[in-house]
Length: 333
Image 1: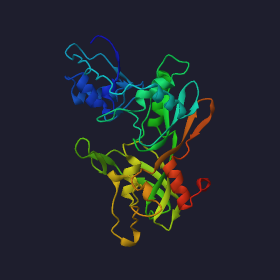
Image 2: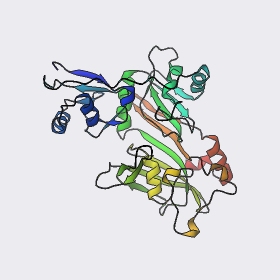
Image 3: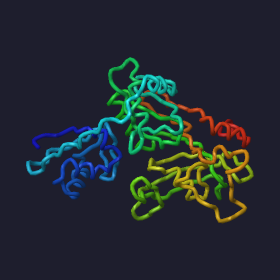
Image 4: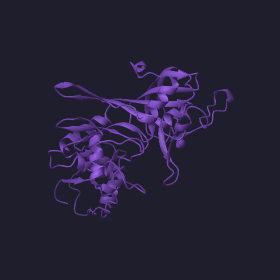
């Protein structure tokens, strides 16, 4: 190719390692050349230097330098027709989720059970409803991060391509403070600490999970503290992720012996009978199968302005569980 290319990641190409994305688009590119182009800053994502393991998302822009006539690009796979076409009710519903709006971003309080993006057997999702957030703009808002389907709380969308680049860079850095609240089974050994355990994806398609793997895993760091506990059987944790790996908080909570209530994928059975908590009967039986993980707040630094802190109220099932357990939100400080 004779010049620099700016290629947008397609809707069906998201959540893919950059080196794999490049090889799909440019099959003749070797891993060694990819690494050299990244090391010298010739390949960039949204204008930023990245590593080959960086996962790219739909809507991001990849800068590709001239590669020579022998390397021919391959078009992206034809995009599938979206399975989900939002109704007027869907568009009105997403507007009700709005917590905050300015010229650059919109913050939503995502309900549990609603996926952020489409996928296998996922027909209804936030991404498909974003036309409802255009308001006075022609440009469609863009996702800049994700929450798991069953995780509730603060979800940010950008109102322009420029804002999307800036926000995506903030999410990849440690400059944005993220606070999650979780109800977990049991009580950590320590009242506060840092979980640092590399995570790698295992399992077959559709059954993937993140496991501790010091050799192949990606660095994953989470700060935590116990806010309150009910007889050391159920604890309220405040979780502050310093990295953003898939299922990081869920996997880390399992690793310290306190799985998140309602998280079947990362549940464990405590070998100590005195520490086991059976939620199938009694006061909290209605949350036994409902994820109790909530993205409580985001603090976003902005040049020349005060830090913007956005807080999302608890979903109904967690608010009711707090009442049943005698937990007071003011305890978090």
